[in-house]
Image 1 (cartoon, rainbow, N blue to C red):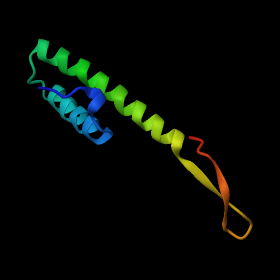
Image 2: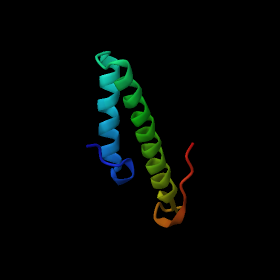
Image 3: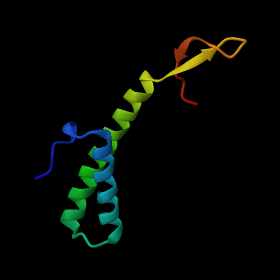
Length: 79
């Protein structure tokens, strides 16, 4: 039985997503199975995206003074 996606760690969700992609790419899954795999894969992708966004929001860049010493932090800004 599949674990609920909400209970998976980022790493577990990513690993399962990779397995699903491999299975779909192999072409071995019957149509109904492929549709189910795709749907779960999409939910896993969204879960991974949510986890990455949450982690990114917590990352802070260290601001250095003129002598290269940490002088404080600023929020991380993805570029």
